[in-house]
Length: 354
Image 1 (tube, rainbow, N blue to C red):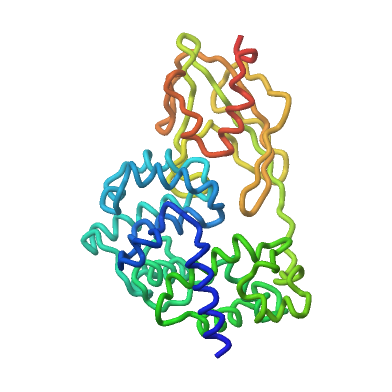
Image 2: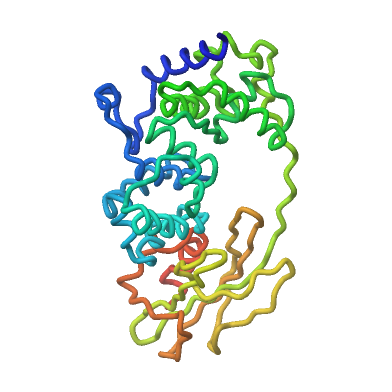
């Protein structure tokens, strides 16, 4: 009975306080029996991995305007998708997004499968995303558990085992709580509760619809749960990047990274290898290179990076197969990944090129 009351109280709260998000259907549509579009759910969930709703909203609108369904996305040029993804980070997501869209278009006639196991077999779709699509888009009772839901469940049942060791126990609770009716709404309600009330710091317990049944709140543990195992310190790597412009027209030298690996298939400035020891400066060609005074710093998932930036004017030199000249008036910094945008920001001053 307690599990049923938790689910009922949460859904009742969700009906009044659900966030308005561009990939969700509204309450009137929901009441009329309209189901969410699985393409929209899938795209939003992939974008939201390691990224906030505030950042994702605009990217989502651009993507769905340019590619309104999975078949349109499947036919997109890789470079166009990578350019629109630039700035979202974790670029393997974009490569898998295209792979998945093409599999669905070719093998499933452009229709998303509904069952968890088939979804899980698709490129870039893990257990949480498969469960989210299955429950939200197809109303199947698949328990979905993201970071927000882990936090809510840890506090609700006062689970003191630190993450990630507690995941199996947390998942058992989510499985029990997920109702046969409205499982997708329940998953979204859990996400909303974690994002707006049961926040990582200073949770708003005074307005929480589950406060009366929250074991963590009763034990004054809401500010300390969930416990987490200490993270390993990230190493720092160093590298050099080289920004060149062509003398006679001011065009910028860019290259497209290999499809696999970090920043795969993205537009970048030519760079050296990145190593934990200060690497030797290895320019891509001979020129009068000058070093910019400050390093550009960036953090990836597994390491910090410090880049020395070098810049030079150059004649029209032979280029490597993956390099090309970008006319100055056509360069869009938004097409570059975040790291390369930082480089452009410090190197684009006219004073440096006079």
